[in-house]
Image (cartoon, rainbow, N blue to C red; front, top):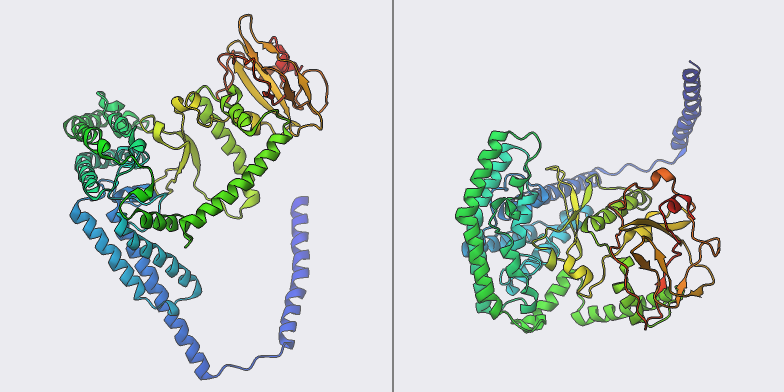
Length: 582
């Protein structure tokens, strides 16, 4: 009752304040000198201008809607990607007739857009006009270099004379498209079966495009395609349900009718054995024995016919500027110089002893910067994304409603893919966005590439004064605290090993090393501002799935005196020390 009285009182008070303000506003308006009424001719002219703008805007909007529908019908895979309905049972027609049909539509779209008077459009629609005009004109210009007529941009333009690369092509995109499309109901699975049945014809079209590119002298560099035959082969294992192309039939949704599950799976297996596997075997043999040996040795884009012009065009395509490749290169050199100076500052702040090359080798080779388990790497990314999400509200006024997740790149294409990439989702079909990360083991430890980073120690426990990381060893769980900022002094310490079990140990440095003291500058073991309770210490010998795992101690190098111990490493001989923070 009291709360209701308070609310009523506040309402009356607000009304008491508001009504005089409204009255004052009306009074102020009444005292303002009134502008002379526009003449009838002026009113008529303004009305005609508004009507003309409205008609032109409606015409532009209607054209954009119709053109969007048309492009979705021409490119069913893109329709699946964005959740446009009704196209999930087909593949893009890459026959000569299909390509010619799309080129004609591109020319028609450009002519239709130019027929709309830009000056009759309101400013907001003039911007839409300009943006779409640039897309259509750029796509038209790219036809001379073999680019596909599709004007809506992706990461790179698809080239019909080089339809298969190490990072794209039907050997990667077919499985990805099938995985993206809806697979919840029996009707969804029937549509997938139609698309599977149409896949062999699409594969044959890609083989024809490869041969056409060879005749024109257009091929990717040979070195870039070295993994493509294996990518193709991995699509067709002897077990049909192990194929990435049939992933939906190996992962039915819960409560799917058992009888329908068996029927649909059997039909998918028949299509796979009768046509899909033979089609990809044919593609594999063609690429491995005919196409790949004929590919160019030179990696430069200028080695292609009219390559310099093609390279200049694609630089403009990527940057949406009119800068030349040389100008872009100069910007790159200036940025490298600037970033290198910043890197040198960071290295100096760590008191690292050694050259820039020494430091980068340290980052590439020290086990603390690696995950040993793919699941741990993926979960580490997931934790980072959940820490990022709350911060977005401080930076952006509007946030997308569509959620996203972190997923491993499928094994059949991971070795040739980039470290990570994002695939957009579609709220129309209930598919979240996905940040794909590579868990390929080959390059992670042995190839000399940039190591898989451990996000835990750098970003997870910033809520306390020190940055904390759970480190797992086969027989012990250790905790390492890192000061959020390095102290003004550091000291050299001898190499030492921290005993973690009767038989195993971990080297924390391999010679004189620089260490950051904790915030207390104590000579004792590091302690965290948020000391974990005994209940928080896992009972098993393995850390949570988000943590790195060192399966063996790195061997110290007698010649190395540059290793940086990035944080205090407490002397832990038993799990109880973790709980006590000692």
